[in-house]
Structure formats: C-alpha cells, structure tokens
Length: 597
Ligand code: CA
Image 1 (tube, rainbow, N blue to C red):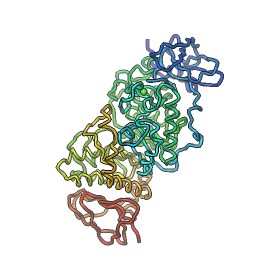
Image 2: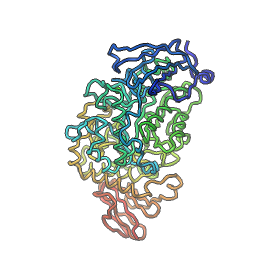
Image 3: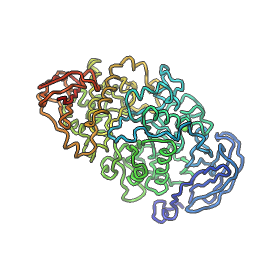
Image 4: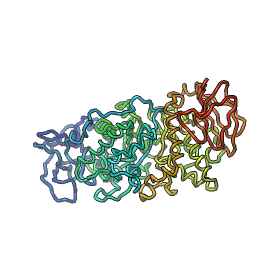
C-alpha cells in the first residue's frame, strides 16, 4: 500500500534535511546515503564504468536502514571515479554520471575546478535585476553553424573561445542558457543529436553531449565550469534554465527509488504527464538543494524556472531565502495542475505578490508589441495594430496588471518558444517592404529596451534570426535552429542598432527604475497630435517617443534644449543631433532624447 506521502505524519517521520544524500567522497572512504522510506531493502552496486550497457559490476553491498527513511553504507578506499547505483538505479543526488546518465559516479569535485576557480565570481553582483540585459541562447545554436568559426562546435568550451567575445561586445549582462543539466532526449554516444533539453534526467549534473567526453564523469563538470569562468571573465553572468516541473519520464530515478513520490499522479499541467509534486517535503528539499548546488559549486548566478506556475510558492521563496541576490524568474502561466495537498499556492503571475522579487515573463507586453504568439497573422503595436496604445503605456511602466513592481517583470519580444521576432513580422506583414519590416524589428526592441522591468533578448534577434516559421523547434534540425553567422554581416546595421540600444539603456538609470512608486512619480505621458504616437518623459530629463505609423510625426518638446540619442537609424550614447521646440520622428521608429541644457 502507498502511504499518504503528503500527510503531516509522513512528513514528520521522513523528512531528511541533512546535506549528505548521495555519495560523500573522502580520500580514504565514501559514505553512500539514499532516501527510500518505502523500500524493504537497499543495495549499492559499484561498477568500473559509467555505461550501463557494460557488464562490469565490481560488487554489491547491502545498505543498512538509517534515520528518517534513509539507507546508508560506507566503502573504504579512494573511490573517486567509481560508478554506482542504488538498487540498480542512478542516484538522484548524483553530482557526476556516466554516458547517458544511467550510473552515478563518485567524484572528488575539487579536481573539476579549472585554474583560478577560487577567484571566479559573478561580475554583475552589484547590478539590480532591472539593470540586467538577459540573452537567451542554446549551447548548440551558438556555435554549430559551419561558418561560426568556433573550434569546439556545440560544446561548453566554445564559450571559452575568442568568438564568444561577441556576447560581451553586444553588451549583454546575463547569458541565459537553455537546459544544460543532464537531459534524456539526446543520445550522448552520438554526436549529432539536437534537442532543447526540457526533459531532465539528472538534475545536478551537466548535460554530457555538450562536453568533449560524455563517458568520463568529471569532464563535463570541468568544461561546464570553464564555460562559466570564461563568461565571468568577459563580464557576463550565467543563468540556467531549470526544469523542476517535470522530468524526462516517470522512470526518473527518484521515483523508481520511492514509487509515486515525486509526481502529482494523474495531474498533467505540464503536458508531459508527470507534474512534479513540489509541495512534498522531500521534493522541495531536493529542488532547493539542487538550485543551491548549481549556485555554489558551479557559480551559477541566476535561474529561469520553466513552468514556474507548476511550482508552489513556498519552494520558490525558500530558494530566494537561500540566494538573496540571485536573479530568479520563470514562466508564471496559470496551469491546470493538481497539487497533492490542500491550499497550495503556485508561482503564477497572479500570485506575484506572494513571491517578492521573483520575476515573471510578461506576455502582455510581448503580445501587445507584435500580436499574439498563437497566431501567425495577428498584429501588435509595431506592425500595424493601432489599438494597443494602453497596453504599450502599461508596458513602458513595467507594471502589467498582475505586477507590483518592475523587478517582477521580464520584458521580451520573443523567446525560444513560438516564432522568432523576425519570423513573426514576416508572417504578419508579408506585404510590407524589407525596409519596413526591419524598422518594425528595431522598433519592437527599442520599446522593450526603453520599458521598465528586466530586459530579455532571444539570441539572434539582432541579426534577424529566422527559424523558417517553425513555432516549436525543440527537436528541429540544426539548419532551422543554429545561429547563421553570415547574417551578422548581412544585417550589421540591425546589430549595431541593438548594441546601441543596450549601451544606452545600461548608461541611463531612468530606464531601470526599481519600484512602482518610483515609476508612478517619474513617468509622465505627453500630449501628441497624431494617433498611435506615444511620448513620455522620465524624471523630466529622458524623453521617449514611439511612432508605429507609416508617416512621420511632429512632437512638441518640453522647454529647454534636447539631444537626440536614438532615432530610426542609430542608437547609442553619442549625441546625434540637437533639438528644441519640436522634433520630427520618422515612420516606424523610436526616438529618445535627453535634456542637455
Ligand atoms: Ca544527457
């Protein structure tokens, strides 16, 4: 009979909070401990290799029952590099695994530290979240294109190469990597698989296919750390996309060791058939410790929670408590899930007042800008819908209806899901000229980067990335997904414009206000003569104007002299021209002026 895992009695009896689950390596012995309160017997298998297809068992050792439903055993000698399973199953707390993640490995983690690791730190720890410019990227998309110039194509190590300076030159502050934990959808014994990786297999281990050797458990960890260290040296913080809401399948090792514990049964909010029961004490323990592990051991600076709306707010808040300065955000959509306890509150947009500075993706702004993501032809403010004025006014204040403060809001025009910005513009506005469509792209990002909140850019928007109109390219070919570096030269003016917008945003504190009060007291909308035009003044010194129309418009300037820093062609910290009394804003463009006397 399955005990009531979610009952107070069960949790009191079996919640184990110490930090020694898994294999704790020491030079002369390793202690193994696993949480399996419903097991009648547990045994440890140790193996020579990490490939479960190899018949190379060294020995089997019975484990003894310990406190709070744990089982343990101690093996003497130096076990660094030895592979193991519990009852034939991978250790859910594994820090290292063999190829394809079926066997765990005992590891001396110090050996995986690159030279200088002890001095490695977050280069942007002093930034407030609204100063972050996040860039969302897939490891393979970055470097796999045949013209990319990278040596380590598709690997963590590509980020240690000179070509990765591209990211720093663009000006981003944070790189958000699509899943880099060990996922199950790519066969690590082959070199050509592609998947986004939203199918966790081992939560505390880097994915093997991005390493140069997926067979030897330490290599992927070392190369992962080299990537982080190298990005930090370039001034870029690293954010992991983490998927604690479901797993690759219900064969997930934790669930095999404690059947029916890890999931919410028939609940299927994720669409993957296995919503994680984050509200159960040992699942919460597991998630919180996993996030902390990445932060402490691998120096990860922030976390993007996939389908945060399936995770309970208490789990999110415990993570926040342990990582007070990390940038934390997620997808706060309301999901149809069935938690295993009563009165569980989930981390959705509408519950944002209960999760403090945890931020949520702002789909309101995303769709107001360019039309619904669920339609190829629906239009938004930048590409021809002239009824989105009020939404855009809310957007620039970083205060969609569900948010209390701009620090809770991630602004974006597109992300890995749905059409790229350029594909959306092309599908909704196919009859516009190329020049008009480029202006729409630039205007969308100019609005996003002059809005309050946290800025988020989908990799390649700055070089008009297309995925050939594929909405969900999670397992599409490289041809669809990889960044095509020849487009950088082809559309260098778009790249320069993005770079200039980023530089301007970073140097102008008026664009990253921290509180709703500050926003309300600082932003003032100005009267305009033409319809669809939005003009607003921040702190009486930064003037922003959007013109989505096909014709130019004249805007009356407040008293004094003004300098134009952003127009239809250029953006940055250089004064482009001076203006007084009125200014003319070109069709489909943004203009930003600063008070100069
Ligand atoms: Ca894997």
